Length: 150
Image (cartoon, rainbow, N blue to C red; front, side):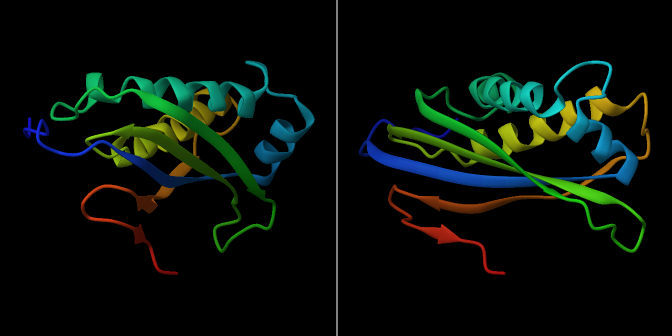
């Protein structure tokens, strides 16, 4: 692990996303609460928070940090793409005050939320896929602010 003992504690925030592509029928079942395992987005929200908290257990060189906030939200797009799939975009924001950033926690939260959507819905749609797992923005620390263009 990188030595962060000399770094200043600053307020740090990172936001990441993941997109889940699924059949229109699957999105409709999610919206109507007709998935057998339960409320898909509520479970995926909790899973994302849990994923953020477990990041140093999953990513070998990540420092354990004290998260001050993790927020998971979802945007549904019911318009089918060229493959006939709709999407759910997971947005995960993690915050801390400390000597190292929370980018990996935000990315893990978004990824775990997306995986949970798959797990909850796989009985009705095994063809779901993920894309656009990426860091959208980060602030704080020596390197300052980053914002993905586009």
